[in-house]
Amino acid sequence: MTSGTLAILIATLILAQILLALWFKLRSGRGADSPPALPDVQPGMALRTAQDTMQQAPAWNGFRAFRVTKREQENEAGDIISFYLQPEQPMQLPPFKPGQYLSVRLLPPQVTENPDHPLTRCYSLSDRPHSEHYRISVKRIPGGRASNYLHEKVPVGARLMVKAPSGAFHLIDQPARPQVLIAGGIGITPMLSMLYSLLDRDFQRDIWLFYGVRNGREAIMLPRLRELAEYHPRFHLQLCFSRPAPEDRPGIDFQHAGHVDAQLLRAELPLNRYHFYLCGPAALMQSLVPGLEDLGVSGEDIHFETFGPATIKRSPQVPKHTATAQPANWQVDFQHSGQSATWDSSQGNLLNFIEAQGIAVDSACRSGSCGSCQTRVVSGHVAYPQMPDTEIEAGHCLLCVGRPDSDLTLAL
Image (cartoon, rainbow, N blue to C red; front, side):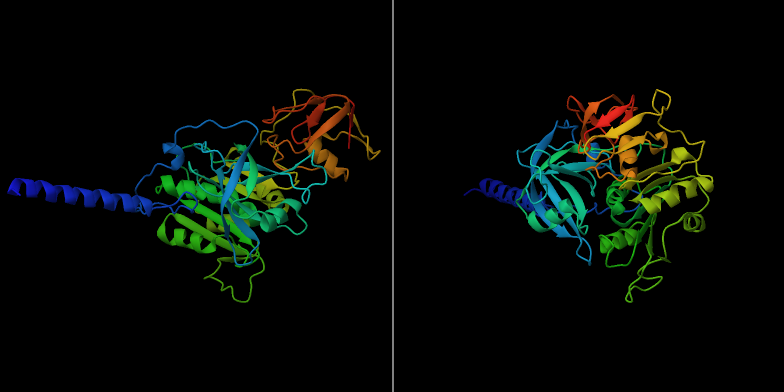
């Protein structure tokens, strides 16, 4: 063998080793069904998120089959589980706006008594956008048909029917103003998506997270949140425990005893103009939204989503969505229950109005996306100040975004 041939052979072997090392490095990164970590970068570096780099794959219509590729318990209490979902038929997932949710349809007879009317629930996406999978984090609610079924009967490999991401509550493209994320209980899930996306793309702005739970056992992903706060100097984590456990140490395991309220925000936040994002139970929202306005925060800087029925009273200067027609004293009759009531426009939509009459209605998104509150109209007309995302069957109406446009009889 000549020296030239030997040199070529050695060079070939070296190149092969380099390529093999690169291949192993890629393989050992993150699998399609494993939770991604934020990139290992130095503060001050600006990054592009997966949403920026992903091709804009189109959203699909209706429900599509997904498989659960991973389940992960997210708190010490064991009542929050994350489900990682991948499409049954390979496809590039469309990106979503941090804060949006997935509509999940459940068909088993253990969940719904009427197989022709499947149970639909909306769960916030709890991660930044990825092209391989979605993640939802579900809290088990005592007596909750959907959450108990997901926790008990949906293992890895199970099939779920999923609608494309939607929802009007999400991060808004805007100048680099400081962000304040406020969450109560499981309302943390859309905030996680917002937080991860903000930290992924921008180290230059201050980000505050005020997270209220009863104690450390109930808090979701607590070690991860503390790790992010320690690593990112401009991320300020404020944990508020309303009923600290004996092992919860003030000033170490949590910063504040009690609930998140406007006075706490006033005391902790430096004087500045912020964008506020709020999500949580009705009591938190009914206190904080008007409380922020009383502190002089402009309505355009307050963005919120409520879990469950709630009416948020806002200051008069805050713009409201109103119907094109003037409010009228329409009579609303409920065929099955035999009840009647006069339309109260302050309720905002038919779903709130009906729940105020003590009539139970199956609902999920409360924003016109999932279709679970669709109800047959016996007589009369329903108007929509904003057109819903979901299709409405002939002879039916969508209660969560509809208002009477005449006297009305509903099959309830």
